Length: 212
Image 1: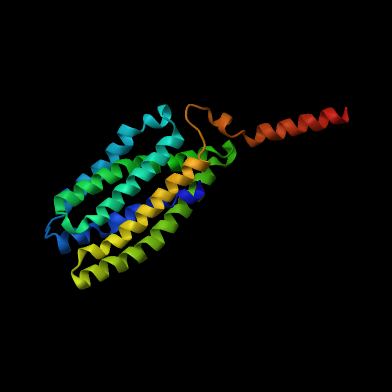
Image 2: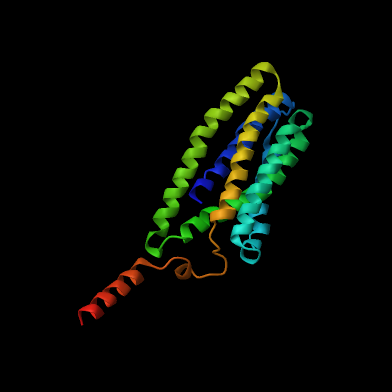
């Protein structure tokens, strides 16, 4: 499941890192504020509206589904990129991240829950740092080169290469979740992963009993 964590960072960078330049360089937008506001709102609404389903439909199904759906939608956007306007590109991005933001939020939370209580805070910080570093460092380098090449040639479709990479990684992350994901919905944290203190106490009692 750890391998799936850096996928959202690649997805965000694949679209958002090139989004502003795409609007201004290729689609003639002067002020990008309203477009970015719509994009941000979709991220918020996705997490807000889809969150109840992660406890009813199930974490594994929802995380895998949102990852795969957002990846497929990003790939489709890359295919039709040359025919999109500023409005339709923003609409595509809003729909993609409506699903992606909810899946990413739940994935990071679930990863922390599968570790014993005493180590959860450290684990989520550790995995978040790894995931962000993988997508946040490699992503901008790759997608920065992509937007530079596209700008130099005046061909917007050259940005689509980054979309396809982000899409492939998200779909792969969804498949990993479907196979290795933990069903953490509607369970106590102690049930998902037994606290270390409980395990230590059990071992101590076992040792005491054997000596007796």
